[in-house]
Image 1 (spheres, rainbow, N blue to C red):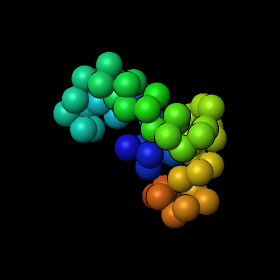
Image 2: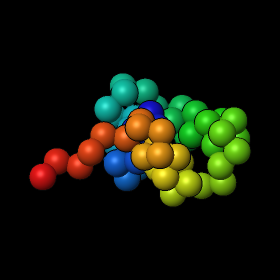
Image 3: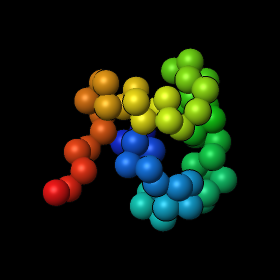
Image 4: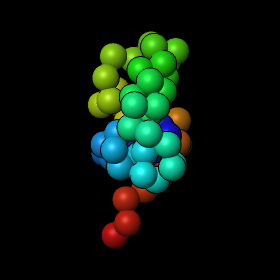
Length: 59
């Protein structure tokens, strides 16, 4: 899920990709941010890139 956030996907887009509800995505994102000590999705994307968890953008 962190990789999808790093791609800039919305909760709805992530939900469709993972076959779960957007509300479930929202809960998971909130919990993930708290556990990682991050405050927003931009910080989560930067974290994913720093730790090699983000997929490179297609060229």
